Length: 131
Image 1 (cartoon, helix red, strand yellow):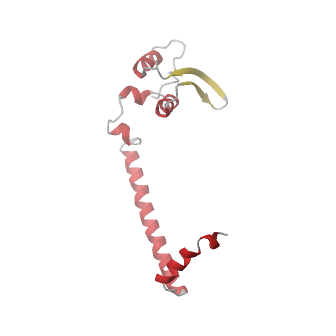
Image 2 (cartoon, rainbow, N blue to C red):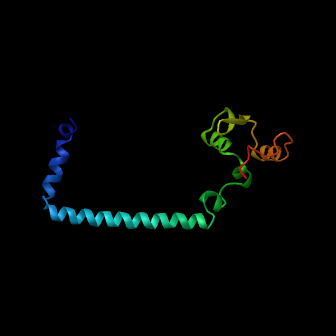
Image 3 (tube, rainbow, N blue to C red):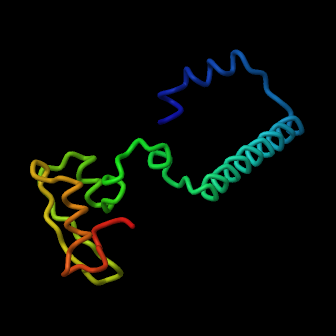
């Protein structure tokens, strides 16, 4: 069925391309695989370099996010990013629920939230902050 619907694509490429020998195809395949290996090696090296420099999150390292936003847990960050009106953010570690917090888009202030979490006597580990 796929070949029947797109038979014109096959005819288009056959018109401009000539068949190649098996040896030529294997040589091109080897060249492309070496190029792919080189590009992936350079990419992996650049990722390792960025990790070594401490730039795991490039938006944070460039200073494009305010400091109070970077301290928020990923749950609150995603709720803000997705524009969710009301949510319950649950902190889970393994099979244990560590805590829950309510998020309301209209009344949520990241600076106030960070201050509350840092000074919270009932949550000394500040589980809803990214430290």
